[in-house]
Length: 331
Ligand SMILES: NC(=O)c1ccc[n+]([C@@H]2O[C@H](COP(=O)([O-])OP(=O)(O)OC[C@H]3O[C@@H](n4cnc5c(N)ncnc54)[C@H](OP(=O)(O)O)[C@@H]3O)[C@@H](O)[C@H]2O)c1
Image (cartoon, rainbow, N blue to C red; front, side, top):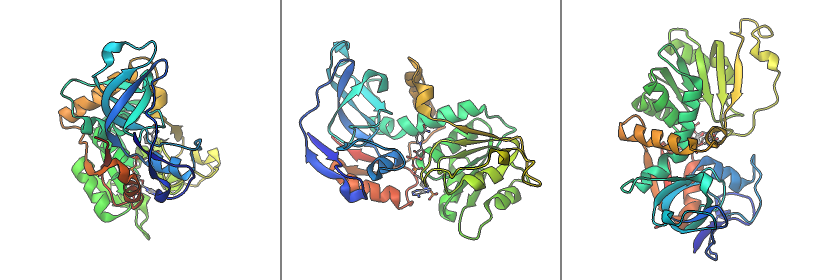
């Protein structure tokens, strides 16, 4: 089979198109012929070898939709031929065939769009978990970092659908303003010289955010804390710019920093932990596909590249110019 493999960490050029033996499904696994593969920022971090360590050689990827072509020991053979999406198992996906543990798999309805499923599975279920956990309502002012990105954009859409007043923050004026079409009420560009917390307060009549969603980490952490209102919650869910530097928890108190809002909560949410109980992954994905059907969540597919051009997909994501999902075509 055709696969994309890395044997050393580095830039996009370490992604090599190779021919590997077809994998065989082990006990409790199924073999999927992938049609569409979702490219995620975490794939770039696995390729680079930081901040998430992985073993080499690696066929990267964590999300794809396709069809079951074989089943391993202990798996119901009638699954063969079923359209499915699989996500969150962190290896072996940039390939024509992937052996997938049943727990990472969700069967799809017969006429489901495989490209849409591959575009929304990981980001959609992550946004669904984040927004549900935050119990958002009409009184909430929510700030979203990297709001033009795939997961950030999904959070904007679902938080707005939950009734919250949303501020979309992105690294250029154009990227920030694009979040207004996703349901953000305010757009703030995090550009050099811009005081982002001041700009957010100016746009919102002086309000601080009750919830800030931050998947960027290192570069945005201080700004995210400064965006919060008293009793606000900073939800970290990623570290696209690198890990957050060690910090003094006293900064959450509002006592050590004069005039700070205080009594703040800091959380880290990994969607996979919330999706691992039996049946939860499937129901979350069904909820997300329902959001797509009723228009609350747009799949925002912005590029489709052949599987062998995975390096180009990584260059595209690193360029910080995309405002939606990049898919690899493995058909
Ligand atoms: N916790 C979970 O369960 C979970 C699940 C899925 C994804 N995630 C995390 O969510 C984050 C977003 O993932 P995604 O796949 O949806 O990617 P994405 O948001 O489409 O792309 C990353 C975005 O991060 C921003 N960014 C900030 N610093 C950057 C840097 N140094 N290099 C490149 N981009 C940078 C860019 O937006 P601007 O240029 O506008 O800042 C870019 O659009 C990742 O950290 C990922 O690991 C977490």
